[in-house]
Length: 304
Image (tube, rainbow, N blue to C red; front, top):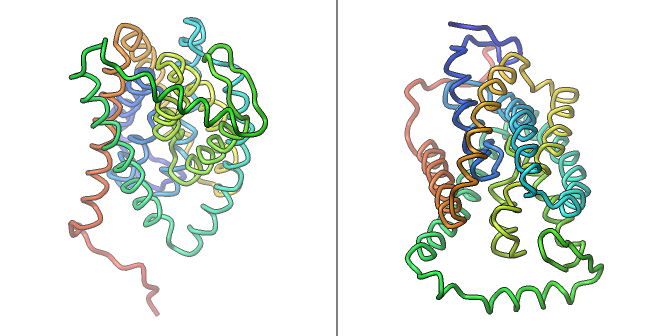
């Protein structure tokens, strides 16, 4: 069934969009990444303008994150204190990112910047996580290293503004999650992602938070960050297509529930492996787009 998108100015198959939402919703509930790392590239691949794909992708994550964060909250997997400190930085980064997206779109550079961000960030993070998760699966549980945890904590404890996070079992500087949140908010506005593909690895490997708490806290923070960015993108850049967002949300609502339940029965190492494979796959696909000649070549030059 074809539906016309008023903001994107194109026709799409509504069931294809719903299936996109279902798949990324499942991955969101399973890994806590918010699904944006897949939504934005998928929308661009089917011809949606990059700025609309980014803005609508951020708006779509709101629905999936709301369902997923509620499910994890009921299971006790959300560190509320950590989440609100992250939000203090992500809202600031999101506001700056929306302004920057508007400047890049006006100069005609937004699409290229988005592609490079995906290739560089996802390629580096995904490869690192894939190597680590494969080594963790091959290593016996009794041999898992613990000394690095103490070393990292002692470094974080030397930074100013120390705060306790009882749910995560951490004590660290408030500057760390604030700066992390700022970067996530910036990426949400520029890439249409929730920033979970950056936040989750840092929470796991730098802050050393428990995997289950990382997924729940990430989703809770994504809910409010993407809501802010979605509102700003719609109001300032007119980049959120309501019909497209609604179809994606309908699919993600069901997918996120299934993902959260599946994640509750999986080991932390398996969750990280799934996330790594998804991130690497998207990076490869985006990277190929930079070198493969398009089927339909067109020019944006103005005809006189």
